[in-house]
Amino acid sequence: MEAEAEAEAELAWSRETIPRVMKIVCARLPQRDLVSLLLVSPWLHRSLVSYPSLWLVLDLREMTNAGNRLLDALSLARYGQVKRINLEFAQDIDDKHLETLKNKYSESLKSLESLNLNGCQKISDKGIAAVTSCCPNLKVLSIYWNVRVTDIGIKHLVENCRHLVDLNLSGCKNITDESLELVADSYKELQSLNITRCVKLTDIGLQQILFKCSSLQNLNIYALSSLTDNTYKNISSLSYLKYLDLCGAQNLSDDALSCIAKCRNLAALNLTWCVRITDKGVMAVAKGCLSLEFLSLFGIVGVTDKCLEALSTTCSSTLTTLDVNGCVGIKRRSREDLLKLFPHLKCFKVHS
Image (cartoon, rainbow, N blue to C red):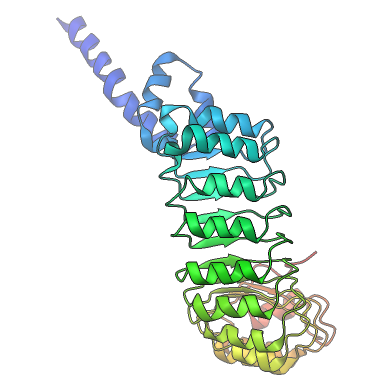
């Protein structure tokens, strides 16, 4: 009797307790490790596959033969409710793979919310059209460093995906103001936009975003030298803005920066190489942005110790990152000097 009771207890342990423990542990594992566990034993394979919540992410980042891997994965029932696909810098994926996905496995993408195609340079407007047609619930799209996508691809995006809140077009050098106008008209609830180095963009396109996308919290307009002061001034209309990257904004003046300082929720501001800025502009930021945690003044020769004193008066308890390297007008910029003004600083160098 005792032996039978022990056997039953062991059986209950293996059937109930172990699977529960495995589910808890596996939920914290990287997806690639999770896939490796499938090969350990048939029992473990069956157990893991039976938990749909473990298969909501498909990570093919930096993998070779990624196009075929993607199709093979989506042919499996366990990925039928996938919510996030990461193909960042994946190799061997092109338009044909995405068109095949549309024709054979579109149902698997109905729940997709996030798609990362960063660095997938063989994908063009055709691929964007194919994949977005399968993703009606897409919220996040990133296509960094894609020079083949044009306004045509963005047109397909806004037609197919109506719920986007986060869009990264950084390095997409062939999109124009037409794309920004489409985005502004289609995504009034947009929260994050990155248009770094989109060199064909002008004031016209960005003005549309600033006027129509009032929910923006993150705006990255790094290295867009064609933008003018009038557009920078209108950034002040973004009352929810928390992160703003203006690196290389060579036309940004103190007056425009004073307008931007009206964004009271701003927590991170990158002014690297904004060469026209002086103490006046930074002091306006000190007065207006009382929640500032990150500030880069790297390479600005027109600022002095005076602006740091103003910042220390209002932001000494919040600022944790401050880069004043290359600011030759600031004399007290050693680590010790800065810590006296900003005791919570942890990072003193943003750019190397």
